Image (cartoon, rainbow, N blue to C red; front, side, top):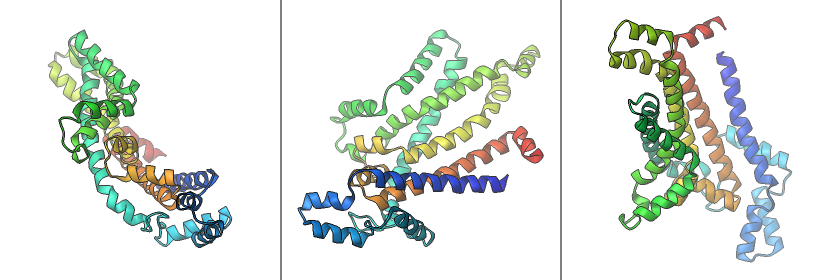
Length: 301
């Protein structure tokens, strides 16, 4: 089991990085040509620069050199800034981590609340209202919500770029829908379980039944889902950071993609693949610790 997970993790990181490497080379043009068009340099200068950067070599040679550098701890150097990719990511990691962490807290609170109300609220009005909010979160694009929020709060906030809670609310609202759906589905299924029916028949208090027999079991599903959503937030903040003009890894990735800055794009993809694998492993471990049935299945596997 452990060996299989290690092989799967390595394969995931390799495949994600390889796809990014190939797609960047398939796109027409290259960063040197783009820079040449802006600076008005001669074709001989362009060719010389491509040779210095190794872009004149066959793709398979570039690919081998890239992985050789990775194994030596060299993620490459930005073709535009001249800074090592690791330094660029380290400089921009904190704003993205802050945004992702705040957003996942908001998403967890809001998603659990909406799912709970939609499934177990005492009145039909509350259930329908919660369901409507979940559907809106799923249906409305995040760029539309973000743009609307910018228009609404721009005149009330002096420097919108320095604010954390506003983009975090927008991002958290959209992420919360998937968590709310999980909570709603799990609660709907839990209330129909035989042990819940027996608990009602025994005359236990409704609050005791909900806490002990309904809410506690769904943590097995919710906690791993929250961990995976956090990984999504770390790698999916491009739109939010762009709309609110925040610095971060998402902004670095967008700029590098437009400039065809190969090393930076590849470095971001490589880092996000590693984070995804780590968080997936954490989610699996949490699920195993919380659900005895999974432990038994692994022991018999």
